[in-house]
Length: 219
Ligand code: B16
Ligand code: MG
Image (tube, rainbow, N blue to C red; front, side, top):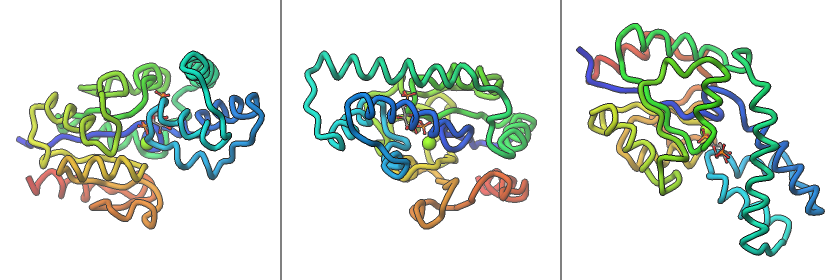
């Protein structure tokens, strides 16, 4: 009997929704009269929608009233949802299903730990919802990553101690959150960016089952 659980971030780990967030934020920036670049979009990864808009308005040097702020949050999300609604299984990042299937077969609890308030519809769209025993997302938390709240709630839901949880993350703030939660952090993406992670892989194709088995048996 294993006593570990796995927590997956969503954007950048399971699917690449960052490109859709980018297009929706760029549209808003352009409407407000300034440019928003792909490089600037890097700052938005793993960051809550509200914080993203604050950063965007800083970039554009725009002072918004509360009413405008709320309106732009809604507008951006509606544009983002237009992209999400067109998603299907082909957008799942390489080999994510292989790892999820293996964990499911071993009866290992699986949770989602994402900052997104759209996590559930996205998992439904790409037909992965059934793999997840627990969904902890932007609707469940009050504090954003790097605060460990999202992952600690996932651990609590799985009935596990944080040190027995393993987190897959693509964002610096997410790795920090996992480390702050005293969990095992696995960086998915560039090692030089995610250097604080306990382990690093460019993507799931690099993760073989012997590595997962080792994580399972070390506990
Ligand atoms: P939403 P993750 C994050 O997802 C994204 O990386 C980040 O860019 C986005 O602002 C945030 O979700 C909130 O998303 O607007 O859908 O609530 O990486 O934590 O899965
Ligand atoms: Mg992410």
